[in-house]
Image 1 (cartoon, helix red, strand yellow):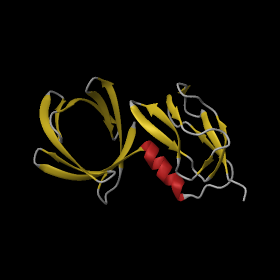
Image 2 (cartoon, one colour):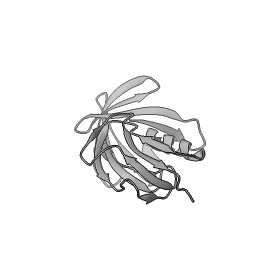
Image 3 (cartoon, helix red, strand yellow):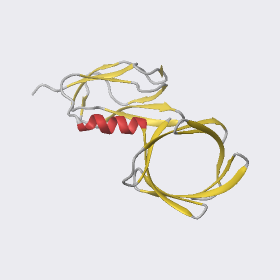
Image 4 (cartoon, one colour):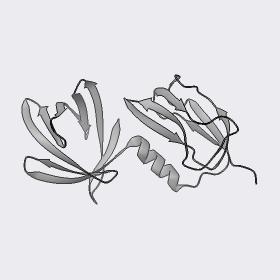
Length: 172
């Protein structure tokens, strides 16, 4: 999964992070890929091995997307946002109007469907949960309205572009 990471008030960089084995990660920064072995060794401490060098990093969460990282005596104040959250935040800035078809953005498995055709939902209300990359992601309704179609069932595997549900504004 890609993340937008920036030092607070700095330019964001895209960092790719993929777990390729138990505690083994492939990290891509500015087109360069490295492999790291990372294990949480305390409440906020991570033991990391990269290119045969071992070091510890202390990570302290600061709000929803911010965190402080202390590595080798250097403190970094960072903000990170995953692609899905960034896309949703960007789309939330534009006001969605009319019938909305919500599609899967990444491969995953439908864990829960919380609405059915005919249900009235509010903007931002969770309609279903999709598990992707070992994380559960709640899929919200982009508008207030009525669910007119549910395109998947619990247990279904989805690919990007799979129609999850359709919601239409409620007639007054």
